[in-house]
Image (tube, rainbow, N blue to C red; front, side, top):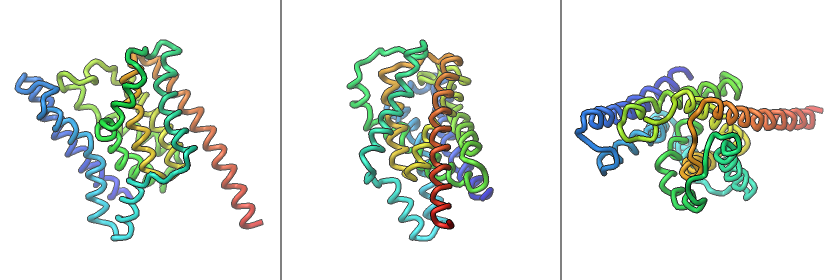
Amino acid sequence: MGKEVGRFLFYTFSLSWILWGGLAILTQFNLLKFGTALSIILFILGGVAPGISEIWLKKKYSSKEEFKSFISNIKNPRHPLAWYLFTVGLAFAACFLPTLWGGASMENPLYLALINFPIMIIGGGLEEIGWRGYLQPTLQKRWSPFTSTLIVGGVWAIWHLPLWFVVGTNQMSMNFLWFTLIALALSFLMTVIYLSTKSIFLCIIFHALINSFWEVYIPDTNVSSALFTLLFALVIFTAFEIYRKKNNTKAHQFLHG
């Protein structure tokens, strides 16, 4: 397992950091302005690296059946309506709730989230092929969902680091500690979705929704606000873990009792 995880992280970080590092150098020396076609291409390619890396590694090292099943999971939209409603509601809550404690402000109409949503599937959602589609379930073979989520959230936050050096990105104005706490909070929420549905597709949808709602509810990147969001995520995660373990116990008793 360690070798597989190391391989995934090596290719993901190498690809992303070379592209984003190059973009940072070009913008720092004013050789390229962020927002131009080339800068956006470099930005997006760096962002989809976790997905590209995992699809390539899966094709290279897995059986045809495993690869086919993995790809099917990524693009499978067939899930109960209740899970779509839950995914949309959870993403909305994570972005809206900070407005109640001064951690965000509504600066655009809500329909903007709907307009941005298809763009955000590429500009964020497809990362989940790597993070929740591979890294989370792989780490859970050795560690608990809680510990695995902490690791994935931490890795996810650090992976974004070069964007703080790209002149013109939103990250330049963000507090990195705030971002790390938010990455952990969102990781716990996505663990709930993934453990309950085993769906990479729904994790992609959730991630894209978060990025879309953030265009409406603009975060005020202060650490105390992020701690409240993390607390909210931990409450949801804990409630689902208790429910899941209770159901597993009942199923075990039914099968063996």
